[in-house]
Length: 579
Image (tube, rainbow, N blue to C red; front, side, top):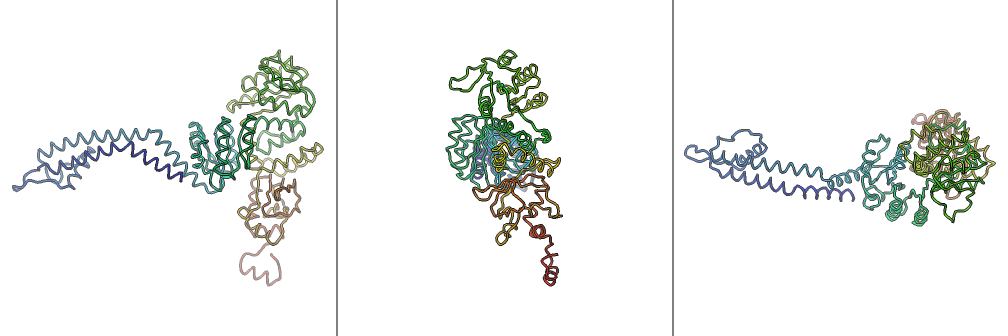
């Protein structure tokens, strides 16, 4: 429907812009042909010759374009030659006018936009599998699109910045990523992006405008009540409104997410490194876990939204905090042991207690200021634990050279959180299992060692798998009359004595039953949701097993199921179950 509307707009714009040039050409050609027909030609055998309609049209066809094939079908009279001169000049001028109109038409921004929307609609229509709609292609949207591409998940991108859409078209993604320069809060553009399609699984709103994100989320819920809505928001009032639009809604606050990440890292020393390793951060070393200090004073430079969230998280861990900010603190703010009013300098750092502090958080919205604070803090206390905020991805090289212990990039934090929601929603109960009880630190360490031994030096693949007929046709057919153990599915179909490079972290059966690190004797059921971590090869072999009756039979029984008619007869004759 949207494609048909776009095509009608294109036709309307073309006809509107080219109406006068086309009429001018038609009139000039008609008068010229009529004149050539009526002009008397040479006298042959006492009879004046006239051009036929066909010959007049043929003559004007090559004359108006200044091609010139001569006088056909006979030499012309002076009257005909004079009329031909008039027609030549008038037609050339008319064609110049028409060509100029064509150039203006091509440069018409409305036509370009209509053509782009029509092309975008066609590309979306050609998407055959599940896809995600991303509204906003800034730092967060760009990182998210790359992550989806690496996971081979198709996305449709809408952004109100034309330069970003041009940049999208230059990216080397592994899957189709059509993009549209438009306002994503307009319902028409969401429909063009395929929001009403059954295979549109989620819409992600990560624009830089909080109000726009809210509007997109509300429009998406109206257009598709069953769609999963993921929205980035840093303002509490918008978060409250978003939570009431109904349906499945995830609100991503990068500051709150990172504050929780810091708190969890203090509770479990392996958490931060393992979390970063799972999302594919290449620089992460599991053998050397990052452990923020869990006792002492922390200094927070900048008491905006990030500073407030960090303070709450640290206070919940029983840690003392000192605040440095140029704006006076709100009277409603409680539990502030030490507040220093002013910019963060060596003087204010010393007033806050930098010499005795165990950690510092530089959380302003200026990257240059954050790096400067980091250098000043280290000059006074070289051993202090540093957490620095990086606002722009373009400053990556500077922050990498600064070698802070933890770098908080809001766009990256939000993108990773969204990526895990889309690709591995069961990771949350997995981490919750270990974090609710600090006594499970050793158990978590064993799990990390197990997963690391399974993956090796390869990039870990974190993915979810639903046991449905569309994903595992053979397995679901067998489950109708028989039972299958999870351990059998994780055997290598090439050699069932070996296990796949794949670890089942979580199984969700039904709405409430969640099993963390299920045993090999777990009996899988249809519609079970599984969370795996392993290698790409291991996962592909797993998919081959659950979708191939011969491989599945082999890993379950250790026998080879005969495929040919003769071998099937032979097995029955011998009374065997397989080869």
